[in-house]
Each structure stands twice: as structure tokens, then as C-alpha cells.
Amino acid sequence: MLNYIASLGRFGMHLIQQYGQAGVLLSRTLLRLPNPRKGFPLVVQQVYAEGVLSLLIIIVSGLFIGMVVGLQGYHTLAKFGASQELGPLVALSVVRELGPVVTALLFAGRAGSAIAAEIGLMKATEQLSSMEMMAVDPLQRVIAPRCWGGFISMPLLTLIFNVTAVYGAYLVGVKWLGLDAGAFWSNMQASVDFNLDVVNGIIKSIAFGFVVTWIAVYQGYYAEPTSAGIANATTRTVVYSSLAVLGLDFVLTTMMIGGW
Amino acid sequence: MTHLIDIKGLSFQRNHRPIFSSVDLTITRGKITAIMGPSGSGKTTLLRLIGGQLIPGQGTITIDGQVIHKLKRRSLYQLRKRMGMLFQSAGLFTHLTVFENVAFPLREHTQLSEAMIRNLVLLKLQMVGLRGARDLMPSELSGGMARRVALARAIALDPELIMYDEPFSGQDPISMAVLVKLVHTLNQSLGLTSIIVSHDVPETLSITDYAYVISDGKVIGRGTAESIKHTDSAQLQQFLQGLPDGPVPFHYPAINIEQDLIGETR
Ligand SMILES: Nc1ncnc2c1ncn2[C@@H]1O[C@H](COP(=O)(O)OP(=O)(O)OP(=O)(O)O)[C@@H](O)[C@H]1O
Ligand SMILES: [Mg+2]
Image (tube, rainbow over all chains, first blue to last red; front, side, top):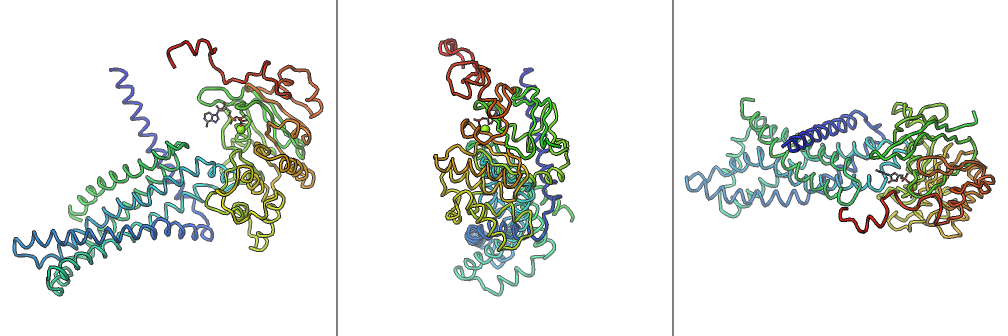
């Protein structure tokens, strides 16, 4: 019994220590701004690696999710004779929820795991140590560009996801099931509010991008420098980011709906 | 000041296992100092302590008048610009070509033009015999080649102090001879201070001015290359001649083997 309490305590201490470490890592990374002449190309490189290379999976998923929501929505709405409202249904669910959340989950799987594995392997092969000995700060040179790349990419990917998903629903609803194109678009336009819906969705995506990237760089930087350690770090990145995104989504949604 | 590095009463532990206990050691400016010792005796650890990557438990490490583990980050990095270190595992950046690896410190710390950087990099690569390999990726190099690239990178900024961790291991006799000469020439022509960690006793002693032998967390022998060859300490002679039996243990500390084999527990 006493042992059980002691191990619980140790676990708690370990958890708090990890949060502390992660906080220190983030603040150091963000405070030590690289000089713009050198830092900017590095950030662009990371936006390419994390953002542009994720485009394919984001676009394909967006299209399919849009089509499925269109199809399901049409059949449900048709029961109430409200199939004209398909446009608003799809647009609202995608822009407010599906867009930011699904993009963040895909981003964690595609880019987050890659960031964690890359940083972990750089650590295991002493690339970070040798960088330190060359008087180059790995936080500035390696971690910071990856953070900014993630912060910038996530909202942009979300916007692209939203657009393709709505287009997917348009293909199904209008081109296939024969809804009137004018009604589809004008109903959508009438019921989607820019501030309440679009901006709130983007705020969510910024928050998710921040959390996923932070988890990924933390897991990579503090990975145990072994094969199993790196495997663990990538797995944890995906699992923790997914949980964090879903939990945070609930919190943010509550705040946004509760009278913002 | 003739001492570039002054280590006093250094103690260091890893996982509660003492690696060093009150070690005193000095590195003379402009000379080649060898640090030798059995595998696992803490030579790499000593270099990391000197580079400020590990913090000593007790004692001080003074480099050019500055206590390295008390420095602020900025001054530590300033000091590291004057050091080069060849890592035992090379530590090349796997996403950059050989050329870019050697150019890395130059691009980070100087404002040189592209043409200048190209010339400097090619000169350094020429020194280690790999000018022709400039466009290869590190994954396409053999272990010995990778270490030579790492050496070129460590000397790219012409540091005042170079620490070589096993520069000769994995080299064939020819490149070993070239590297031995290179280390020697660099030291003579540029007035560098060099620290060599190596198991290749005859090659290392042939170019060193002073040598330390560490074992069991203590300095068991010190002196000029000549005097160290002729000491009559049993420990030292065993190490230098590579005799399997003697006071220096070959085995990592453990209970005796009969007990271990018969015993049930791990
Ligand atoms: N990261 C680490 N964590 C715990 N112990 C370590 C770590 N690195 C090294 N050690 C221990 O420290 C001791 C000294 O290691 P070190 O790498 O300095 O040896 P070395 O003299 O360089 O050996 P070699 O000649 O084989 O390179 C070893 O006994 C090793 O078990
Ligand atoms: Mg070593």
C-alpha cells in the first residue's frame, strides 16, 4: 500500500517535471530569436517540410470528408424536406469543427511524428552535441525553425482543408444529387458568419498547431537516444497530440459558444 | 600563462558511479597532450567536461582563465568558437553533403563570401584527403572517411584548441600515418593546442609532448612521451604494452564469474 502511494507520488513528480521541462524548452526556444537573415530561410524550409509536404494528405482527406458529410447530410436533411440547407450544414460543421480538428490530427501523424523522429535521431547520433561544440545553439538552429514552421503551417493547412471539404460536398450535393447550385451557395453564404464561424475555426487551428508542434519538439528533444527511445517518442507525439487536440477542442468550443 | 587548461580536484559521477575522483591535470598551450586509458575509463567524458557539456560534481576546470562551468551561455558559446572537437562517433549532419558539413561552422560564424568559403572548405578537405568526396552524403561514407570529414569540420574555423576523440581509430595504415602527420603539422604550423584521446599508443606517443594515462578515475601516469615509456609502474607498462594480465582490470566491475554463473538472480 505504502509502495503504491510512493509510486503514485513518483509518477506525479515525474509528470510535473516533464511539464516544467517542456515549458522551459518552449520559452527558451521562443526567446532566443535567431537572427532573421539566417533564421528566415530555415523557417521557410520547415514550412515546406511540414506544410507543403502535408498538402496531399490534407487535400485528399478534405475532399473525402466533404463528400461523406455531403452525402450523409443530404439523406438526413431530405427526411425533413430541408435538403436545401445542405450548404450551411456542411460549411458550419467543417469550418467550426472538422476542419481544425481533422487537420490537426493528420498534421500530428504526418508532420509531428516526423519532427520528433528527426530531432531524436539527431540527438542519438550526436549531431546536436557536435552543433553545441561548434558554438551553434541547437535550440535556435534546429528547434526554433521547426516550431515556427508548425505554427505557420497549421492554420494554412486548415484553410485549405476547409475549402476542399466544401468543394467535396458541392460535388456530391450539386453535381451528383442534383441540388440547385445557387441555393447551395447562397444558403451557405447567408448562414456562415465570418467572425463567429471562420475566425473561431482559425483560432482553434492556431491553438492546435501550437500544441502539436510543441509536443513533437519536446518529445524529440528529450527522447532517449536509442532506437526504442525514438520509437517511443514518435508514438507519444501522435498519441499525446491527438488527445490534447480533442481535449482542447472541447474547451475552446465551450468558450466560443458560451457567449463570446 | 603557459597552461591553457587547468583542471583541479575534478570529481564526476554518472548514475552514482564515480568516473573521476579528484583528478588534477593541465594542458600546456601550444603542445600536444595525449590522454590515454582503458576503454570506459572516462576519456570522452573528460573531453565533454572540458567542452562544458557536462558539469563537474566537484573541482574546477579553468580554460584560458575562465571557469567553464560557471560561464553564462553567451560567454560559453564565445569560448567554444575557439575550440574544435572531433567526436568519437563523427556526428556529421546527415542531411548535408560533405562539403556543406565542413562549411557549416564557417557559414554560422563568419561573413565570408561564397567563393572564400568554397576555397577554405576545399583546402580542409584536401588536408584529410577527401576533396573528391565533397558531394557525397554522410550515409555514403565509410566510418573512417566520416571521421576524417568530421576532422576537417573541427578545424574549419582554425580553433586554438582541438580535442580529438579517437582520431586514428578505423583508419588504414596509410590514412593513419597521414592523420598522425596532419595532427602534428597543424599543431606546429598554426600553434594550436591539441588534446588527443587515443588507444593507438605508439602512433600517439610519437607526436605527443606530454601524456596522461587515466584509469579507475585517477591519473595513473603522467610525463613526456619518453619518460612515460620508461616508467616502471606495473599499471602503466601493462597498458602501454597491452598485456592481458596485470593490475589494470579488463573487465567492467562485477562479482566473480563462478558466483555469477552458478547464481540464480540476474
Ligand atoms: N550517457 C551516459 N550515462 C551513463 N553512464 C555513461 C554515459 N556515458 C558514459 N557513461 C559511463 O562513463 C564511463 C566513461 O565513459 P567514456 O565514454 O568517457 O569512456 P572512454 O574512456 O571514452 O571509453 P572508450 O575508450 O571506449 O571511448 C563508462 O564507464 C560509461 O559506462
Ligand atoms: Mg570514448
